Length: 257
Ligand SMILES: Nc1ncnc2c1ncn2[C@@H]1O[C@H](COP(=O)(O)OP(=O)(O)OP(=O)(O)O)[C@@H](O)[C@H]1O
Ligand SMILES: O=C(O)CCCC[C@@H]1SC[C@@H]2NC(=O)N[C@@H]21
Image (cartoon, rainbow, N blue to C red):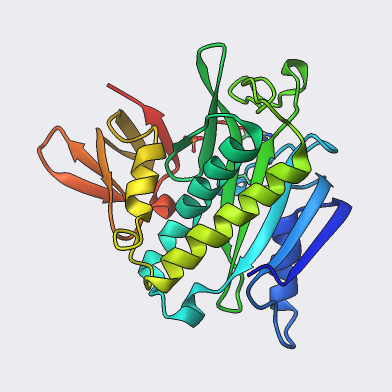
């Protein structure tokens, strides 16, 4: 699946680099390109937030995917960050011996001294050529005094058995190849390929009462009860209705209740 893997010492953002390559025309980027950076100076998170990625402290990489070529309808592409989350969690457990939980839609959480902290994030972006670039950032060895925000954590701080980045990267890429391959072969049907079940098992958001802040100062409060066929989080509100929210619709998702 991974037909090209480049490692660069330093770049602005691996996501921006692959999106730019896809826009470059010619034969385009194609599926299965992996770009890994040891350090990023302008990494981005969801909603154009900055992602802090100091040299050799984590896993920073992006991949090019083309689910449309395999006939996966676009409504189902909301599963891409979620399936990447499952792959990250599986890979980190296998190669790092560390437990993670997924916060819908794109956060990877660890527990540091009994507190939930964000140790990783996923950014899926349309590449403009009909493809998608999915970027992954994981704080592997950041020490407490190096954390960019008080809500951040790292695998090391969460007691990982190994923080050797090479095997971690390989295990995550293997997991991604596996889950993406299954989902694509099932035409994006997350239920049929076991992804919906695997995601639900690893998702810390389900079962919690959350507040989804939507554009225009609107908010929805409800218990997160499911992730639907399009990867949207379904909230059971106090009004007794089930409201699906898509990753693109929410500004913030916070604990409530
Ligand atoms: N290396 C990093 N590790 C963790 N967080 C980081 C890192 N670099 C930047 N951040 C940013 O710090 C903030 C962490 O805030 P938080 O834990 O609330 O996550 P969030 O993704 O903003 O969640 P929400 O979408 O619910 O607001 C985010 O904006 C995140 O992108
Ligand atoms: O938490 C988020 O909102 C997502 C963070 C994604 C960070 C990764 S690091 C590799 C890739 N390149 C980027 O600029 N962003 C992603």
